[in-house]
Image (cartoon, rainbow, N blue to C red; front, side):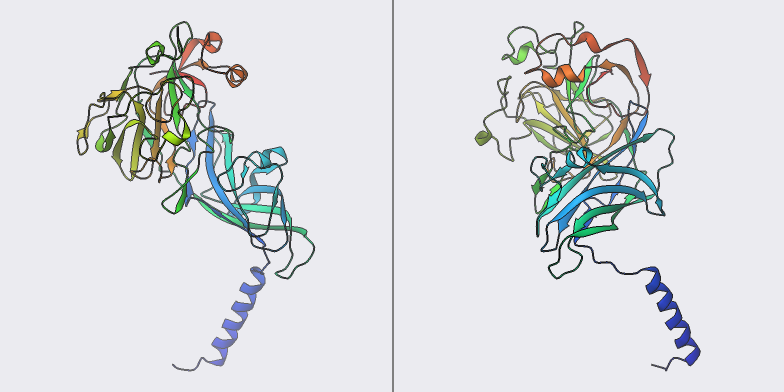
Length: 392
C-alpha cells in the first residue's frame, strides 16, 4: 500500500482530533435500547397523536443504580424535549422484566427493567423522525467499584415510522365499548409483554376487548354466569380489510363468565380460544379471538373481503366475559409478534364509560349509560381509546 503523504496524514490527524473531541466518551453504567426499531404515531379520539413503545434498561455496574428521570428528545435537536418521566410517572412505567410495576426506581447489579413509554402530543404537533432518550440517574461512575454519582447521558435511539394502517371496523352495530384499550401503562393489554421464542413481544400493545351494551347501557341482563345473557354474545365478527386467512381454531368450548379460567387449564395452544388470523399484506396481520365453537366461517388459505363474516363473538379461551379481542401485529403469531397501531376509517364516538365507576366495579353488571353522548360524534381515521363507546 502506498505511503500517505505528509499533508494527507496531517489532515487525517486533524479530522480525527476534531471527531474525538466532538464525541467524547462517557462511561454509562446503565445501558438502554428500544425494544422495537421504530414507533408509529396515531391519532386518538382525544384529538392527540400518541406514541407508544418500550425501552430495555440494564445496569451493567456492580453499584446499584437509581433512575431519577427519563426524557424523550428530538434526536436531531437534543435540546428539544418531547416528554419527561420522573417520580410517580416514571415508577408507573417501570417493570422488572415482565413482572408488575416496581416500588422504587433502583436497578441492582446485572438487573434489567422494561420502561413503557406512552406520549400524547397535540394533533397538529410536528413529530421528529427520530427520538433519543436522556437518562438522569445515580450510578457507578467507573467500571471499578465506587460510590454512586449523578450521571446524565443519552441512549436508545428509535425511528418514527409513518407506515400507519387504516382499517375498517371488526364488528357491526352500535354501543361497542373499547375495554382494556390503549394507552395507559396500567392497562391489561399495554403491560402484557411475553417472552416467546427467545424474544420479548408486546403483541397486545394496541389490543382492544370489544364489548357491546344494549340501549339501556347494560353489558349483561339476568344471570351473569350465562354467556347467552350478554349483549355481545353471538355478534358477527367481520374482516377489517381484504386479506388471506393464515390460521384458525374452531373447536374450543365457551368458558363460564364471571371469572378467568384456572391458570393450569390455559396453554399456549388454547389461550386465544377460537380465533382467526388474517394476513393483510405489507407485513401486517389482524387477530380476532374468543369466538363461539363451530362459528368460524373461514378456513386457512381462503381469500376474504373487507366486511366478510369471519365468525361469531363468544367466550372461549382465557376470558372472563364474552368479548372480541382484536389487534394488529407484525407477524402471523398472536403471541410472538409486536402489536401495531392503526386507525379506523369511519365510526361515531357515542360517549365513554365512566372510568372511576368501571375501575371500582367487581364485574360488568349494572347500568353504564351515564357515559352515553347526547349526540354521537362522527370520526374518521382515529383510534378508539380505552372505554370509548363506539357506533360502527
